[in-house]
Image 1 (cartoon, rainbow, N blue to C red):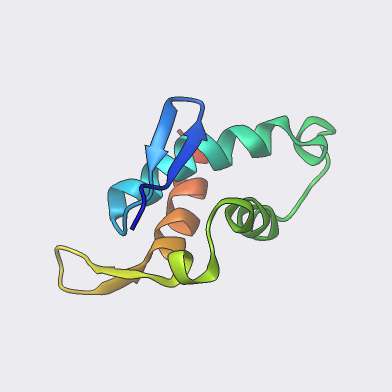
Image 2 (image 1 turned 60 degrees about the vertical axis):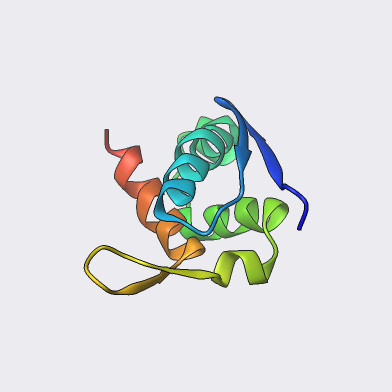
Length: 93
């Protein structure tokens, strides 16, 4: 399978089914895109989840988003779940 590189504000990011990928994708691609959006810049309220989903859909297929990995606690988590978790978490920092 060929390497899938995604350009981010921190440089190219290789797609992997991992928590680390979800974190980096959120921090270096999704968050910057949201802060550049008209909705954000206007100061009006907006819904974060539809924006996260739309941006993620531009870069990852549904299969890539739904691919799962095992967390250290033994729970299975999808790549999209990790992205959805990290965006609001990093937003507050």
